[in-house]
Length: 409
Image (tube, rainbow, N blue to C red; front, side, top):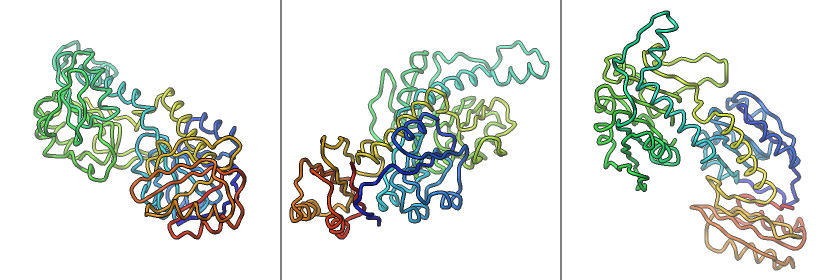
């Protein structure tokens, strides 16, 4: 549990890892932070060494922010995942420590969709095989095994922001779209919802995975699922590396049951560019392997850099938690001419009354106040006319439900 002093915290240090776009550094620097950057990920030990004094941490998919890291980073206020997924962060431990977590759920969806479409076309036309033959000096002018995507059936597993957008664009190319999602999702255009994963596999000529990083998805696509796919079908995974059994995939590619595959994510990935890469899928024909670049276009990374950095800045300066993945959502800036008290607490009855009792007994006038709850947490932002005293801070910290309290402005 963390409940630091109520004295207004100046902008401090930010640490941005994994080659996050320069716009993030610029935005935070302009807001007053001293920003350090690295091009690669850090392991747990390295992260623990670098975090003292760091209030804002930016990562992508490779750095693991564990409970141990969070327990030993008392200065940390917020973590920004400059990507879609947040399964590399212990969200419960972060919330318990009063550390806000933000991500970029929309910024790179178009980039992933375009890569998926490019790979579907390339694999359906067997462009990888033709390209390899040409580079080997072989002129193989033949239509054998090459197809148009128009009229073929696309099966989308996971109909979220990426899957649904892919559905629309693929349909515009003339594909028939079928999808399966564990939750009830509205079908866009002429897409048809299937009642089970197996139903999609038995229908689709192309199967593409766009599932999230929840632990229950680990290993869910393996031998049984590949065996159920149509002979000569194509498989793509641009979601999470741990959801697919690559040994089973290799077996079905080598047998010819699966005609081609495109994989962008892997169970174990190198920490940074230039590191060695190992996979059971290397060297297979009509298989496209890419180094987790589904969202890595210059446009997407620029947008993600600005978006997540702005969320970190606004939380640090104003207590805004809009689109936080682990804290209750409150988004407005402080009332002009006031100071904001941001109080994160366990969500039990009576906390708001206790906070207001402390302020009333100290003669602190409340200009405005907002409360939001999310599961076991509650979050109150209170705008007051002047800075609260150290005594007010002590009493708020000593409330048994307090997780973290900050004075902003």
